[in-house]
Every structure is written in C-alpha cells, then in structure tokens.
Length: 273
Image (cartoon, rainbow, N blue to C red):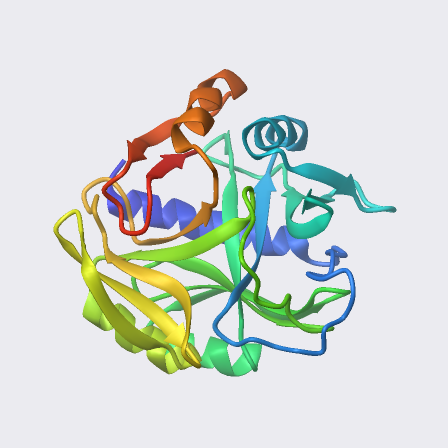
C-alpha cells in the first residue's frame, strides 16, 4: 500500500476514532489528582480496537497487563500495570474498506489544547477531532502534524502522572519517525517548546531528543522505512528480554515487524503489532 493511500486511510480512521469517543466517559490518567502538569510529556496511551477480548489476551500475554472495565460502559477498558493506570482500550466497530480499524494514540500534555491545536493548523497539520471536554479525562484533541504523524493533545482535569523510572512493562518512550527531521524539529519546538539535542546516529541516520525544561520527553528519528511507512509516533514499552517477548507474539495472534535489534540507541529494540 502506497504512502498516499496509507495517509488517506489514517485520516478516515482518526475521524472515526474521535467521533466514537464523543459522549464517552474516559478514565482519568491518575488514580489521585496531582495538581501538577508537565507540558511536552506523553502521559497516556489509548488503543482503539474492534476486538477488545483479543487485545486483552494479547497484551496480558506479552506484557502482563491487567484490565478493568469501567462501570456503566462497555466501550472503555482501563489498562493497569502493577496496580497503576497506564492506558485504555476504546471499543469501536467502525470499518474502512470493509476492514476493522485499530490504532494506538499517544497523548501529549499541553498547557492549552486550544492554543496547541491552533499551532498545529498554522504549521500545516490537521485536526481530526476536538478540542472537546471529556468527563474525567480533561480537554482533548487528536491531531496530525504536517507529515501526517498522529497524536493526542490533552490538558488533564486533575494533573499529570509524576515522572518516575519506568518499570518492566511500563511505557518507556515515544519516538517520532519523520521524513523531514529539521522541519519536524521546528514544528514541535513551536507547538510545545521542545528543545532539540543531537545524539549519535541510529542505523546511519541522525537521532535527536526532544527536551522540555531540561527533561527528555521523546525522540526524533529520520524515517528508517520511508517507502513502506508513513511518518508516525511510535510508543515503546520497556521489557527485560525483547527476544523472549517476541517469541510470544505470533502465538498470541500478533506480528513481528522488526526482530530484536541490539544496535538501536540505548538498548535492544523490536517492533510488534
């Protein structure tokens, strides 16, 4: 499938995702309010899927995650790890070209969702949904940057989760794969005040780290597969042994897209679906 076709389908998918969340009560991102907001930090991940039971089995088997269905709704499930809320699953039965859609959306904390949306539009990006207020979650929008990489913007109701060292099975990192690294650096600097640090190359390509207030918040990599993959935000989960995790994936109905690669900056990496 060509990049143009992929981007058209992704645009339609995100429009359906946001419309599916209208009127839906979503879980707050923290069990207790923190009254502290951390702009530029990715604080939550929601998975939109047509088969909640299957993905529960998959992620329980791969990462040991546990799940809690919210009372009064059959459309939202909270993902827990070691007792903490780390994400959610949204049920959607919408289809594109007769096929069900599935998408992880990473949510970035911003001081003002409305201002961030305006900056996305000024930079040439797209708004797929919102801004809108969602009970318990806060103010939310789903957008695409000028290259089409999709992510969420959120101003939480009670504050963001505090910084801490990720445990095994926790979300570890978010990385932007961009066809135009310099342009992406400018866009996100304007959007959320990121500063760019340059690190050693990955697979022969420059690697940058987005920082805000001195803290690393995300990575920026020149798209390693430009012919096959459109620009995207890729979330990482910390694991003890990537090869052992990958060995479980196909038996649980998933796919291994990139086998464990020890050459990635900072550790061994695999990509799964």
